[in-house]
Length: 138
Image 1 (cartoon, helix red, strand yellow):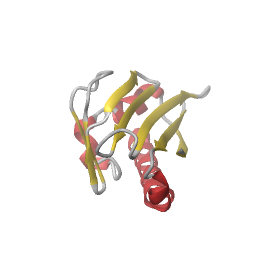
Image 2 (cartoon, helix red, strand yellow; image 1 turned 30 degrees about the vertical axis):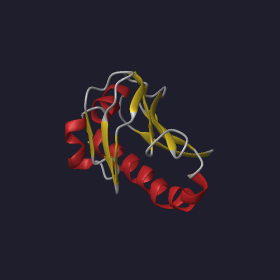
Image 3 (cartoon, one colour; image 1 turned 135 degrees about the vertical axis):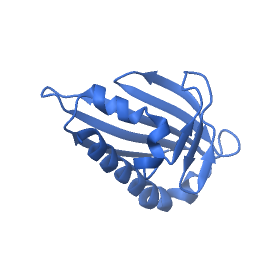
């Protein structure tokens, strides 16, 4: 298994960060990593997600307002290349939050994609985090 984790301090309330994060229709305006997210975001349902060079239909695992949004997707079929993607909002004591952007990758093809995950995918997480910070703080 390979894990990626990026986090950022955002000087905004959890409510504001959650509002920006879950306003999926506006992703094309600001999100450089998740270009589009469509569908009913309900635990157990599938959504459509468009990332750079990839479209897929993961299943929503967690959708807990002001705290966490998590999905699991796979390439073609489970066990080949799977990803559990999480967005977490940790409430700070001063009205700010720590935003955690994480993914756990598993499956037999993960070693083949390790360089890409550590490069482009990690950079995509960082770019999204920065863009979320700018939008939530404005």
